Length: 194
Image 1 (tube, one colour):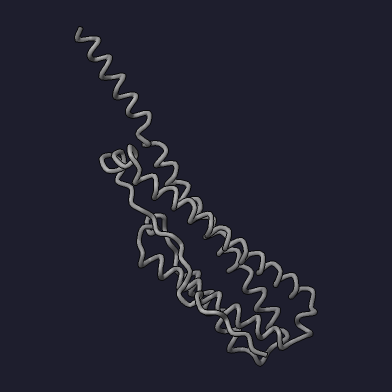
Image 2 (tube, helix red, strand yellow):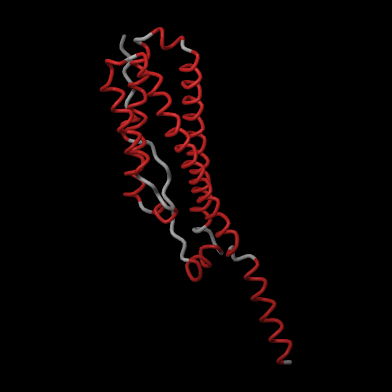
């Protein structure tokens, strides 16, 4: 009789553990980390392209040094802030990261306005190729951010749902991850003047 009770308890524990979400929560957290790494990879691609773009523009626009210097400085600042997977739950670290990336995006848009002043530069094939690469990279960054937010949504929802919430509370102690949010300055409509 004792053997049957032990077998029944063991069967109940095994059944509970098979649906507790222990493995799926960890898999979802890894998906969040991978999505973040994808954002970092596309940001690195952008950072690698910027020196080429700046060098090409410098050849045509020697007297626009201030704008070019702002792009170089913003790139340096944006690449100096690195977030580890542990920082994905830290709102202040995420805000600092977003602010630096927003500053770089702003500097790049000012650079594109400078480019509009130089028709010869716009016709240069090397510049056009770099501009297309940069535009494609910006699109990749946006897609990577969206995928990261989707992974965060799934993960954050999973650690709050029963029975995975109990598994998390008593075994894993995983923390809710921060979404990638737009910089406050991005909400303003850009002004285009000619």
